[in-house]
Length: 489
Image (cartoon, rainbow, N blue to C red):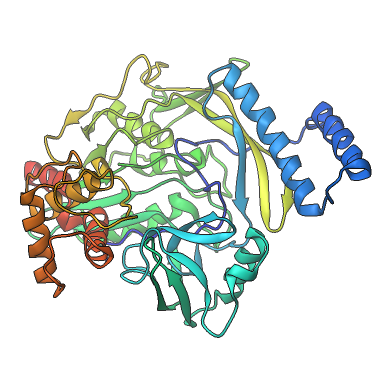
């Protein structure tokens, strides 16, 4: 099975299932939503419409309405030091697990899309880079003439046709323009990746986040995991094998991906797929604000015949901690480093929709427990530490200026972490550009047939960013996984 981490392209500011989100979806529709706030909003808006010097249009009034909702949610969250209660935005454009896209993450500045990150081996791989600004399409739509973010998003959506090749006008962080030809392709957003290590009895599954099952076209993480696990079990994962489950950098998501609570319309959750049923064992429990306890059990008639080990890090949060905690409770080993420590869970209710975007209120509803109703705040998951250079120590790479010797650059810190990990070096990562770094850059430039200046210009940054994507998503460069595989072999 190919070792890829398929990701999606999102054109909204708030990313679906943002960091440490994790919630249970219920049908909750209160009779009144923010009635007092709505009255105040109506009073202010109607007054300005009648008397304001400036003209108000639908976009301006909706932005003001959204800002008022965000302020209310933020005020409640701030009062209780609750980081998770907020207004969240979800794109309604894509209803399928697979959709057509460019394979990039973007941000908007002054109505124009900027590349924030690129999907490894996606349509834009080795073509677009962080900091690139999409100006428009050659002989087509000019994004710089459009008057809003929504109009640019719509123009991008209109281009999203399978196998269509588009030539974009692109400006990099230094202001240099170029033409980039990209062919739209299918982006798979199941968030499940598998790999089988040669000459070992170890199989590997990585879960990047937990999405709910929606329909046959949007199967969610639990069903994708079930299909992936079935493939591995049919191709060598047996009583002599080990399943390595990678939950690093997994921010959580829908708990229905872990357990369907007997709902026949949903696929079995991952905990039900991996752990046996025992009437006396609750692998995790939810306790809401009314002290109502909901217990969750395993779903197998007997344990899996193979061993299971889990890999986590400090960015494993919420639902990924629930899964790791449940597996640890049963006796499976957890490797990596201590997890994020999110012991509360969220629910959500719909607020409004506009331009294919749904706005919902995400709020903290209760706590989750494991090990006979203790929280990970009081009893953290027991993790066996791995003494290796960790991928999560590398942040997204940035480039906004040419870097030269004997200078200090913030962006150089992560660039050097990538180079150290890729080439197995131990050069300084404090941001100072010394002679040793200059010599390594010259070697990289020589290997890439670039002028050997020893400076990190945009062309050299492109090469290093490609190395970064390999380090992030090609398991052969993952020292932590390699350490565990060697330990278990």
